[in-house]
Length: 286
Image (cartoon, rainbow, N blue to C red):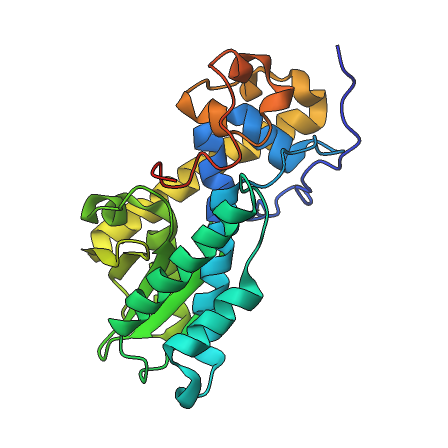
């Protein structure tokens, strides 16, 4: 049996004082739902277990997000296909690809996809937020995160999240997304303007998945986040007491195990099948 880790338990304050808010990001909340063991290794274990090297689709995603971020810093005269090509060149991350030819092909593909995507938007309408950090506090949680883009749509602001993977998101994906809903609530409070529209912009296919929330549906999402945080508060406290031996951190084997960054440290995950290659997340025609 391993000894409890040398981490400091959450400070609860003096008797009679209110319980401190549980601080988390949407990614942390969702990691717990995906797999408690991965959550433990990613957020609690110290030293943190070594994660596998970055995959190619992650490199593509980061580079694409960086180009779409930096595009809005360009003067209007440089918001051109040539300007985008230069941003892709300087932002490219050559990690995880099968070989240099595959990397070069994907750099060209990303350049074309981003150019096509930007042709369809109003390049003169500067967003009110680009990779803007936002926070949301309730009676029990303090959630912080970062919005890819926040648009001013006249009477309201709208949350835009870029997607770069193989799967094309649907309107139902936008409707059920916990991060997007939390960002909408946070943006409405911070900008003092309604924010009910959330969108997933899939850059490779140049499509938009959209949902318009109601006050009631947003409140349900906040309640969902609070419920997850309640479970995490208990799990974190138990980890501080007994460490990795806590039964709360049992693995949740699934098809995701073949992609998990911590698969090397999880026998149950390895039993789910062979690990995916570094470039398996790219379009299969490559």
